[in-house]
Image: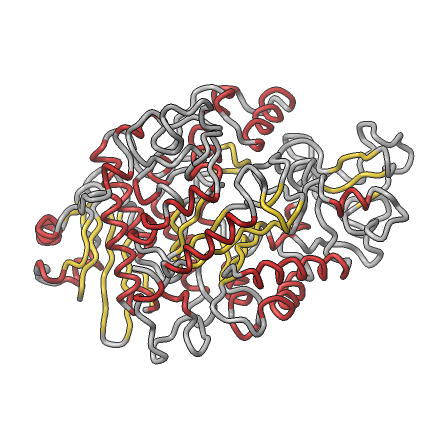
Length: 606
C-alpha cells in the first residue's frame, strides 16, 4: 500500500495540531543505508540503481517514504556524513541522472524520497572549508576557527582552545598549519563544524536545500541539526576558552570535557529552524522535514514540532536508546522494560496536545533491536522478539521508522575482532578507551561493540541465501565493503516474502493497521500498569473506538497485569484480536488464563 491508496485522515481526527492533518500522520518511513542496500555494479558497495531495482519490494511492504542516508559527494571518512559537495552524487552511488531516475520511479509507485542532510558540519575537503583556511577569504568565518591557547606553541598538546573532546575520540580541535589556528570538530577531524552564527553560512545552506527541493525530493532528514547553535558568551567565546565568561565542565575519564552540553539545543536553535522553514519550505506542499535531535528533551520536542511554531515536523529523540548505557556509551547495562516504558511514556505525554513523535528503535547509528533487547539465539526466539518490539513501537502514536532489514528480523553482526569493523566511531573509541586512556578493558570494549556498535546495522541487506545474500552478485570479483552476516542463509527476504507468518508478513500487517486505523495513527495514548517488570501495556482511543496493546518484552512468561485483566473482564473473543505475535487462538487462551507467553504481544479491540 502506497501513498495513492493510503486512507486520508479526516479533519475531525486530530493529529499534531495542524489543520488539515499532514499527509504523514498515518505514513510509515523506511530508512535505506545505500552503501549496504543493493549493489548493481559488483564493486561491493550499494548504489542508487540498486535502490531503484528494489522499489517494488518496498511498495509491497507498504511503506510511504524512503529516507536515504547521504549519497552526496564525500571522501567517505564517516560513510558519507562528511559531505564535500552538497549538489552532486558520489560516484560510489552513481550520478545525478541515477538520482533523478530513482525519484521518478519512486514517485510513480507513490513512494516519497527524503534525503539525509548534514549541515552541522561538512567535510574538510568541501570548497567552503578549503577557502576558510585563508584568513582573508570571504569564507574565513564560516567555521569555528580559534587561536592556540596563550602561552602555548600552536599545534602542541595543551595548546587547544579548550578541553573539549570529540565524540569520535581525541580532541575536538584540529590544528591547521596553513591558517595557523584550530578548527572545531565535534565528530571526526575531517568533519569541521559550520559556524551558523554567520548569516552567510545559513543563506548558502538554504540555497542548496531549495535546489534539491526544486529537483523533486520530498524533504530532508537533518543529521544532528540541533547541534548547529553553540553556547557563547557576549564576546562570542566558547566555554573554557581563554577569557571566556563561561566556565567549562571538568574533564572526564578519557581526558577531555564534553562539548555536548554547550552544542546541543543551543540558544538560537529555534530561531535557526524557524528561519529554515521560511526560507526553504514555506509555500511548498507534500514535503516532510525531520531532525535528528541530540540534547532535545521530550518537552522541547513539543515546542519544535508544534505547527504553530513553524520549525520541524518531527524530531528523533535519543533518551530511550540510551537506557542500556551508563556514563559512557560503551559502559552497557542490562535492558529493563520499566526504563524503556518510562522514556517512551515521556515522549508520548509531551505531544498529547501539540507536536508529533518519531518512533524508532533501529537506524544506521543503532544496533539491531532483536539482538540488543530481544533474543536472537534461535529462530523462534528471534522471530517472536522481533515481532514483539515491532508491535510495541508501531502501536504508539507518531510516525514509525523502519530501518532496512528490521522488517526481516535481521540481527547484529556478531563480529569478534576489531578488524571486522569499518565504523570510524568504533575503531577510534577502542583506541581511545582501551589503548590510550586505558579506562576500559579490551574484553569489555569488544563486548560493547558487539552489542551496540554502529556496524551492527550496516552489514549488507539480506535478500536471499546466496553467497553475498543477494546484495552483490555471488560471482562478484569484489567482496562487500563489510562482512555479510552468516545467518543470511536463514534470514532473508526471499525466505519471508510470501510467508504471512514471517517477520516480514507481520510488518506488512503493522503498516496496514496504521494506514487504515485512525485510532492507531492518531488516537490518544494512555499508559497502563506503569510499574510492571515484564509487560508494557497501553490503550489507544479515538472517539468511541479503543484498542488495547499488551506486550511481554521478556524471554519468560508473564502474568497479565491486574489493571489489564480488570479492563478485559471475562476475556476476549477471537474477533477482538486484531494482531498477535503468536496467533489469534493463542492470544485468546493467554488472556483467559491471565498469562502471556514469552515475547507474546496482543492488540485487542475493546
